[in-house]
Amino acid sequence: MDGNTAVGIIKRRFRETYDPVLISLPGEGFFTAKLREDGIEVDNLSTQPFLPWDVFFETIKLLKRKGGRAERGELTVYRLGDAGLELDTVEGQVAHAVYGKQIGENISHRIIPIAAILIWAGICESARGELILRRA
Image (cartoon, rainbow, N blue to C red; front, top):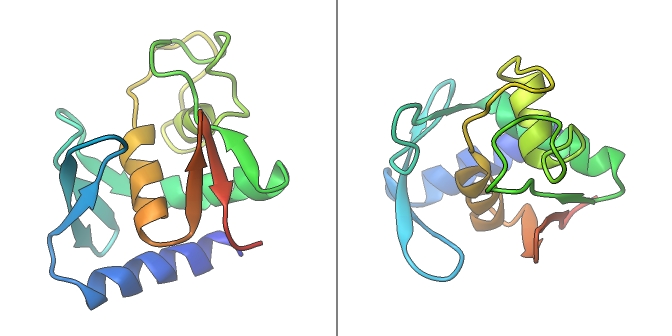
């Protein structure tokens, strides 16, 4: 699977359901996601609620490069490159490749809606601290 295929699957899932979509969070709760032409708008990222398609392209690229599994990125760490938030985590890859963040810079966490959307679409599954690609 590549990023284009993943985005196509996500768009198809949105077309199969009502827009906006309620997407489950791990544990309990949900967030609302709305399909836009250039990405997905979510209501659980307060100041930057938009996820451009590039976040999904980069996540799939990282998962493929790492054999289908990658650490999500530590939610308690806020600086890119710190232990738990390296460039080879999903959060680190997205922050660096999509949002242009450099080592040592503070980042905004986006992993929760990214992972939840990929899981909802059937592209990935979750393991403790990891995101796993379901389709190679």
